[in-house]
Length: 469
Image (cartoon, rainbow, N blue to C red; front, side, top):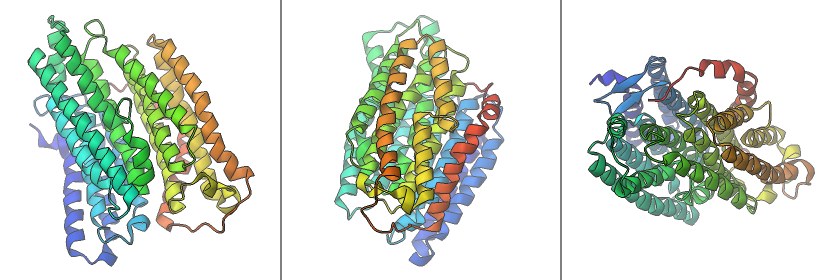
């Protein structure tokens, strides 16, 4: 068991402990130093993770996978966590537990990284539980604010149900197949394992458990409430980071089940279609920008699942999965960074005339929305393009058609916000800025949307040969 294979996760874990100890003994005015500690630890983890580029195999008795998709997904988790840490100091400055929030971010990131590398059902359960427990804390961090507590409670209650379903499903699969690892499970199917009703039910229940972390139907209802009620940095984190790990975990589960043994892919395709349709239709009615972003996050989970559906059916699917996750990560965090920079302004009317009052924030928010829709030359265009391409090549043209229709629908609710920012007159006074670090994070993510879009060809070439175990 080469412990060095988990060096990135261990680095993040040790950093979380160091951050927590610092917050316990340092005076509150110095808690902002936790940002430096957290970002330093994430940087070290990124350097350690770079050493795994190009490797393919499993470790720890086959329970943890190291492959191209897993490594790039864990990179995305580290970067997304770093940006969420950057937009936190101003937001949590008046909270007496300010310094502790960075430790919770890091522990939750470890859970997401474990999800991305899970090659065994038991490790999947542990990773989901670690990611969930820390997520509840982040969602309800403002425990004196009813909406935040409500968001945390809804996240917890739905999570308790989904996790119970996940564990029960794991029991069914293990009982019928006699194994917990994905590779042994695939071998069992190759040796003639019959898809009995109990095994089918178990795999479906495991899929529901992962869908909860992904924010996909039927376990998606926590997403808009968390987006609205959780502290904005927590909302940015919870709508992105666990989703990255869950998407890779979903892909690994689908890979373990041969298409001719069980119709798991049609089930995932149905979940994808339902998820993006529900998310987009619900977003149309929103008058609250944070809830709109929450429903948008639900719809984006559907697009991510398109790559999962064809993960073994087209050679470009692993690349498309990472590209879509990367594009979604940058676009969604940029949007939340702007909301944080505007001190959490959330009513649609608050965004009237924003282009005149805060032009830079308006530009970043516009770029984020255009990227989430998939308009060129943003990075979102290339994420959507690669996903549509592999979905059609994998034989799921009907799903691509549903996704194209949903993309047109999504343009409507994003345009509602953009038109308010540009064409409406302001009915409010000056908009206060949160702090310079949040502003810098918003500008950096906005710039990344264009920079990554303009260099997408080079990036896709780098990702062309990645694989998924």
